[in-house]
Image (cartoon, rainbow, N blue to C red):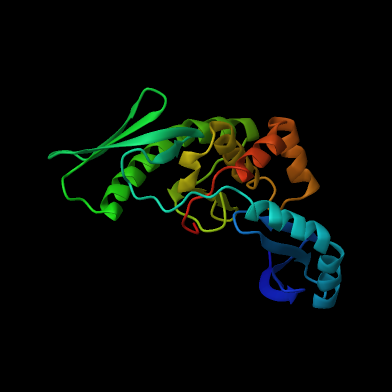
Length: 240
């Protein structure tokens, strides 16, 4: 499929344009920072896109305001008593400085023990926690991918986890490779499953068409609720 990317500015709002071999124009506003994207047919002009965006300016501004009002964590200092989230659960960090293996362990349902060598910097402590987050997310996502591949009758060639700036997940239908945002390790399990189902559904339907929506409605009827839940979650301090 042919894809051409460009940008235009409408009433001070930067709009990402992707021209594709599709029939209808699709406009979306995406977390965490209210990025505005238009997927447009190849034959649609910039002027027509501009008019479509102007027609939706009120809705766009309301969506961007909603994202701007989301609670955001302050910069993490990796010290005792600090709040961290594990699959939607708020946990208090307990830092233990000691020689030996550096690791993380959940204590009960509300405590997160971080074992680090003495004198570690904030960044080094965070690296230990991020490594643990990655492992937890891998262990959760692995069976989900298997389950949803069977449900949808698709097969990904590979999937991985990485920090992503503007997306919870991504799918390349040509290579059949999926990526999941490391931040999902902090979000409720239902939200993670929604992203897994969403990205795998793109192996059947590349764009967010009516067919794509029907696929999610059929196999995950509560997906809109999970999407809303995800978009209302705390955002990290950094612009991931």
